Image (cartoon, rainbow, N blue to C red):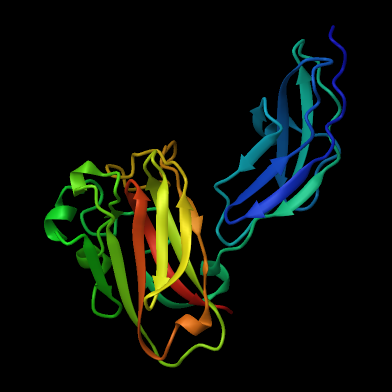
Length: 281
């Protein structure tokens, strides 16, 4: 029988929107570690001994991303133990508790939105698979949407093409969203940008407000399936959702008409879940 692995130490958690990333110290090679077992229970109290029913994942790396958490935020407690190449289990680590970051869609006050924040593209134009019509309907590579006058099903295509898309002319498409504010805000707002999927190229989504650059969002490599599949909530779906909620400085917003522009400056298409502007609650 191989020696018992040491207790995992250095367990740390990094909360983010809809995810909690766990890291810990690697145990090395004496004994050789076959894998780590991550146990998780919802809430702040971890059991003294992990139960197999609470096994979240197994990994050979000292890192795990617990994703798919509710946008409103979830609290989980974790323990980790190591298993040697001979199948001997070590003692479980001390527990750690972490809460994922709540979304502004749960904590903020909606000012204007495009679509439903539900993990689906299906309410948007041309979804779930008629992407070839986008360059036909928008030959200038510009999508314009006016809040209060337009609807997602008729004016907001489910994909925003990028320079990596030969079918759309290898062009950086822009989505220009016009909305009206009754007064100039005193506080920063938050822009919720939820995507159902991206291509394996990833990309850069450039955000501007009233002609001023706000930020560049780095899109992760996706599953490249969202051009043909529109529901990431289906059990077993391979679509790779991602979430961004950058701040829009109050100084860039004004009373009356405002324009928020989203340009896919690099990479392949992005498949929209929803976009929303939120005041802080």
